[in-house]
Image (cartoon, rainbow, N blue to C red):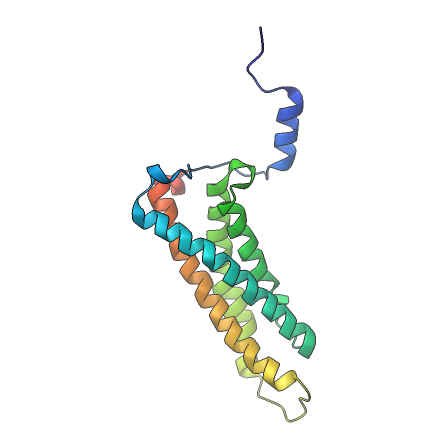
Length: 173
């Protein structure tokens, strides 16, 4: 007679691998979701890679031109990583990672990208002492900050719409 309950090793491994937050999960089978949700998930998947690319571009500009932005675009890459973990259903807790993305990306877009990176850049006037790639990198970095913040806020709206459709009581858990 086989024991159907998971063994001690499995429970230990699962507790070590999962973050210390509630493991919320929604089914990803396409027959259970509406056509608009399927389209939103596809858009969200494409936006993940754009968000990661914009973060990597900001990291590149900051390193090449020594710009010194707040977090240098790493927070945008982290947003993309959280979104990717939700889409690949890491640790069978895709809803948890999507909620983490929702909170982090909204905070990152408004606070870190706009208030702590773009606003100080707008207050610093262009100096004639900038040489080489610095002036162009400075301008491009500001454009990329706006694009990344806008993209992340749009992704937050998509994530909320996905969660509302697939897990209507997600905010009560």
